[in-house]
Image (cartoon, rainbow, N blue to C red):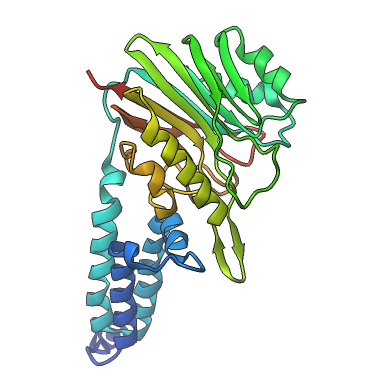
Length: 320
């Protein structure tokens, strides 16, 4: 046994594994410089950014190959993607509670085929939020959500398939037009804006549902989603209230440059692995909570409901 181990160790060389070393270096460059990936045509940049944390899976795959090839060159080169992933996401692993927060909000795409709206509503209430935003509301399910949430959330507003429930009085409720030119259905209505009268002052609250993206032979189809994000960004740029909270199904991660028209106007949410979609094996958080003149202190997922998304809850601390 010892002789076999000695032979295996003596078999290591610097001469093999240069291709593996190149792949390791490439994966590190892709992680750190993902914004350099072109996003025209096939939207490859958005595709990479949608699953950016998962680029770290290249490390165990290349490690296994380096061990199999007994390549010292490849093994040393693996330090590059390890360092890159640690730089980008290592802090997320160590992140704890973001500190004290003033309110809790919940965001959930409840699914238009959800068979138990009442249980879904109860699951969201368990987090004790002051604000709840829902998407994919249907005419049949809406009365059940209203009845279940009413005892705790006396104020609510619904526009099309999105709704907002609040423990605080709501005013100035308006339809938010984020329908992109690529969607011709005039009944498509997935946005609302309301003013919540909170103890910290009037706060603009947006509830939105951006269009879905698709994987197609031609690439990552996110054009409608990006156009809708542009319209939402314009609304946020024109918002007169200082305090703003945006809740919604963005069909994209906070790293996705297609959402830059929105994220450029909001405080970046904390790094986290609170993946919300798909429910059976979450790989990305496409449900978002963002704020302005406030801080999103933490984001976590809640128990599964009848939706294909997991609900997310976030703490928000208002600027003093």
